[in-house]
Image 1: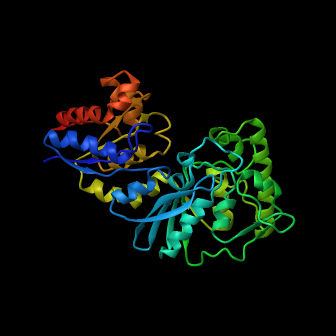
Image 2: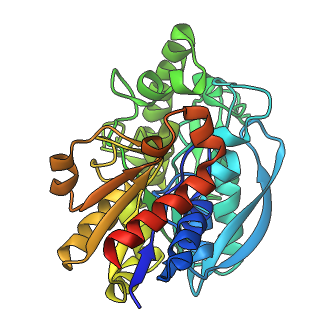
Image 3: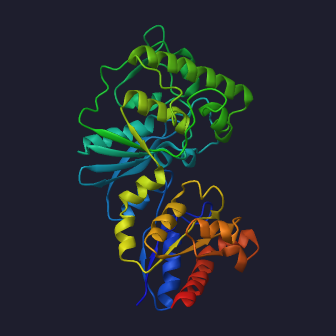
Length: 367
């Protein structure tokens, strides 16, 4: 029996990665094929879910959401390792009352890291995609024991706007001794300036031009204070601007290592072991396009499978790539839902059944 590895990312706005994998697998099994499901992610939303689907243990915790409200989230554990996810803890998906670009905080991410340490983890993978805040990681640090202070020695208020008042940083309570952090990061933006966290990503989080300027100035002040406290200035380090500056705080103050989100998560979920046992691979995401080829999960799956000489099919909602571009990425053929159902609304609502139909088409082309 032909063994299919089904390793898709989410179809954003329609199905999460596990639902996509399940729908494709049903179609394959109905056609007489063997299917193994391995949902993937790239460090944003769905990262913890991918680890859990691969057999990691869930640890439920309650943390502060992006505006401080309590949020139930989950840590994934496996031996000494843990995975925490900013998107689910305090990301955009957790904003209940619309954007709040000046006051949203990364505090919940720090609380999730602290909970993982308390649970015994000594290596923590931090997925920082999908953030809602532009606070330079100050909220995360505060949750881990640092004191972010104004000129009067009081704690500054949470959120990027609060950094306009920062004057000093007390690191005496910051304790992650014996714990290593690995940050899943796929951007190389600096913290400040025209390519920085506020200017590039602030508008996506609801900031208007005046708010962008205020946030950028506050991040620059924050970078000055961190440089004074540590003796080194990493505001221009690649990835410092990731997740509204969480990348900066992780690099400058937590000694974190950064890695490609997709590469890191695929290693965590055991993609290579699964590929060794597969005859055919199906991967994909909602939109298979040029962005995909810049290191996103499906492109990494395709590259690793193609390097083994394994056939690779992409299933997606839509594609903008030519056949030659897909083949150059190691993909044998692309199947898009919009080829079956041109109406976008129906593509979204009928995605499970359309995926099953496409899976049957894939199976018939192989079996």
